[in-house]
Length: 194
Image 1 (cartoon, rainbow, N blue to C red):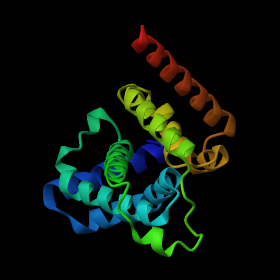
Image 2: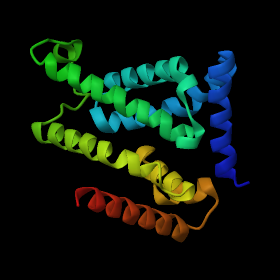
Image 3: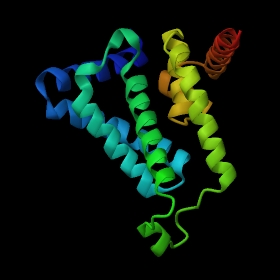
């Protein structure tokens, strides 16, 4: 069994312990592993640390509450957790859209640390959400090795070299798996349109 399969199995086991035994130690391991990755993902989506941290908190709370719904036959633990994060992010954006006139603390105390999203950035974020909705059913059908590389590069925002080092595979293999996965996803999207 490869290191990546061991790691994936470790998170699946942790989710099982949380689901069946409400195991706080297993949950703490999940939290310490996924929270920084989810925060990086949230920072990319929101450009705001406060919102990114809120997304992490809501996501990990859902992981605790809904661990019993995790099904390893439908995808790996990280895919399931990042899907929850994506849904939390959608909910947060919907709330933000419905409360455009509300004033938040960031509006009053902005110290330049949090970049404001421009209208084009908002449109790009929504385009990204729509694309993810279309891709998700096909994403789970990718071979595990390709899905893992896609997750690490696009969801966890790791460089190709970081993925190569983490998985202990050549850089060319990372690029090859990434290209094959993207080709499969593109074909799946084209097939869905026809």
